[in-house]
Image 1 (tube, one colour):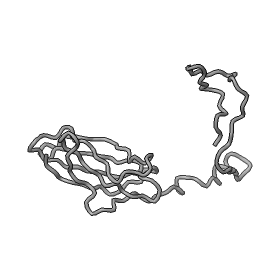
Image 2: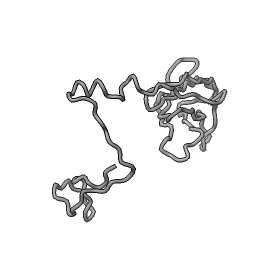
Image 3: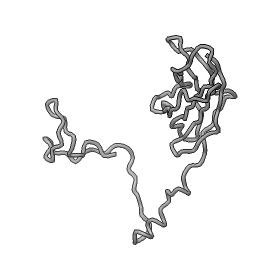
Image 4: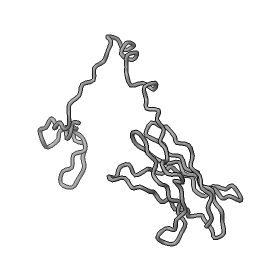
Length: 164
């Protein structure tokens, strides 16, 4: 990782600038272990044919929910309805969840969203609560949630029918 070597976005005196002549002389600093990319081949075509990280080499392991019932209905702090998702597991990282909640009687969409898994927090939360803001008293809803990793691999859908 090369840090502070970019001659753009300089913050001086409370202002950002994109000066080509920064007020310092720095080639940056390196952090972390070094690594080398070796290209096999002498032509662009040979290099592309020998490139190791292709779609065929991508991770294909899908996330999976590890509890028997990963979805539950809970009340949020204001007494409203929320869908609780027990976080799925993956061999690398669960990136997000595709969350769809529909009205059971009409089929109308109440929630349709991609929700980040909070992978950027350490430790990652065990559960996520998704507010169901359109839920009405006496209503019945069907939730369908799919866990998706950073490569686009998707888990089987978890579902839950619940009332408000």
